Image (cartoon, rainbow, N blue to C red; front, side, top):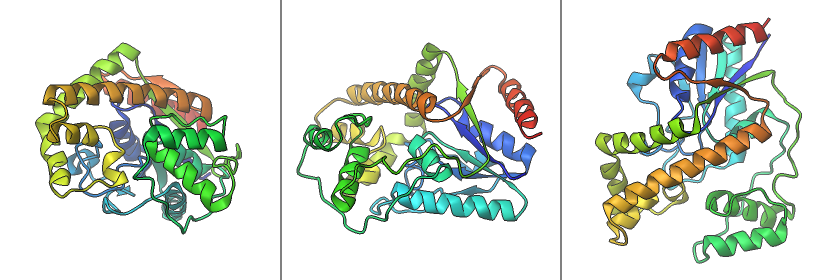
Length: 295
């Protein structure tokens, strides 16, 4: 029976490593489910899988767009479904991995999206102004007031269709799917996030952000992920480097909390505590459970 495996959870919890290990055991290919990792050049800041980390496993929907290009949930739904079918046809297992819950749900559930041909500019309005517009259109919106990308997407959808985004959603799964969530103690996760920010800096995060800054690139792709906009403020002289680092850590911790909330309420996830001291134990636990579910 064809199945789709989904590896989800908050940032810094080990999703990339888990997906590669499962792909080796299940003859799988990995499909990106992170809205920022579709863009070329944004590698360190988005914690994109490296060639070494791939261990020869085929990966899809990474590095497919330039940062100046738009890539919507409509586009992702189309592309992800295409790869699921293609991987199945070749007798392999599709494994979705990432932290963008809306992408995962749009790909696997009976969501109906219309392609939005018209684009709207919101550059001259603050995030608070846009959020208040959204609240008038959809008083019960679940979009976070600081998630400017999703606010703009919701407004664009409304101006294009006259309907509130999300009303197309359905709880009907189109694919037989297994949802695996990785989790850990909240304090442990926050500590890992804080340490990873310093690791990313050691790997060249500041230089990566400086590349886009010097090109005067202020696209949604660059300003949406955590880390680039904070470093841009440092480059602008508005804050110190230490303040930028603190902001990246704080915003990443808040994002992880929102991810937990979303996954717990939106998807039928089976959660596994990660043993960071011996990750193979976690891999074996997940693999054992998956074999049981596949019977």
